[in-house]
Length: 443
Image 1 (cartoon, rainbow, N blue to C red):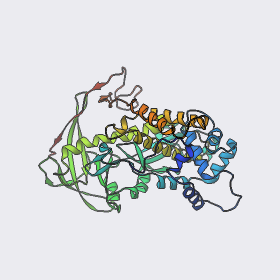
Image 2 (image 1 turned 45 degrees about the vertical axis):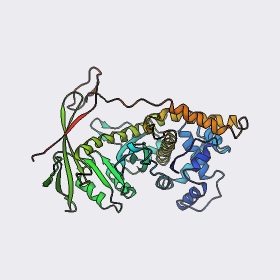
Image 3 (image 1 turned 90 degrees about the vertical axis):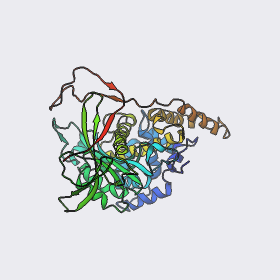
Image 4 (image 1 turned 180 degrees about the horizontal axis):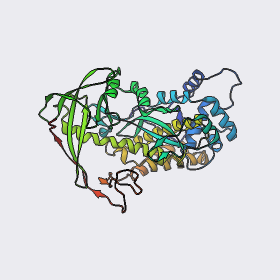
């Protein structure tokens, strides 16, 4: 079992958080990003403040002061904790994400997280809504605009790389100054590794982004969906239907050799759509076109991971924080909470249990129950019986596996359309596996 996997423990949440980062490392990190050396030493260390904040975000109800007391044993008011968070700023939280986040999957135990020898990683962006408090209105830039006009709430943007086979965050960047998704993605690229296969949608299928990828020292491989109107020059056609093509980045005038795959995918409505992929995997014998077309379907796991973060883990549609700095801190702690749950799910699964069938919500509920019971049962259960209790909890979760995900599709329509999309008047869905075929593009 990987040393990165957190084990369900009878100890307090602080010891669980310490398996991600030690108090000494966190104190050094806080000192490194401290804006001023003035002032007395705080009564609550940064380790216990962050442990309490992450624990607070994983609960269904309660005050931050209550959860900090439960974790650290120390009493502080909510206003005191709010002032402490303002002093910390956000730079330390971003550095903490860079330090803590990393791969947890192992090829022999979680084969679905890999393709051949490559770890499947996805990159995408999302936004989280922040309350319209006076401090946020004063410090934030203009609200995000869409085809419906300005959004009701300020949107805090985040771009993240996820381990697609486990929904574990590998790296994340949070934008506080209105940075675009591409700008945040550029900051994430140095985190990529040579044994990762990056899968992304059409937003990233651009020569500019591929140039940025090739400039990364780790030389990661990629599989990107691209728009049909991007130009490429065919140099060779392979027997599996894919082609060796050359593209040119207009900005740098750099010539790039890629493998291009055209395929047709049949929706469950019966309609065929065209899919175009660019990949750096040029060996057709080791990576046939059919395998790569089917592999691109794993990109949807990124959307499922965002759903766990934004819907299953969060309590409300809006972030709880009242300032832009603390809102960014909250998003960072949500990512840390998600990686804790991802590692707990991995500790329950084994070679015969797919990680993603260990329910995120059920694992979160069981974890909350354990943290509530530990202080109550302290001294009532002997140390010899704790391992048996933890084993039974793991078995309990393993028996509540979610069924394999259904092959289900809903119509691409809106109840109140504001574009050319058809209007949805009655809910409907179709079931069945996707059908696809590699096609030979004649252009």
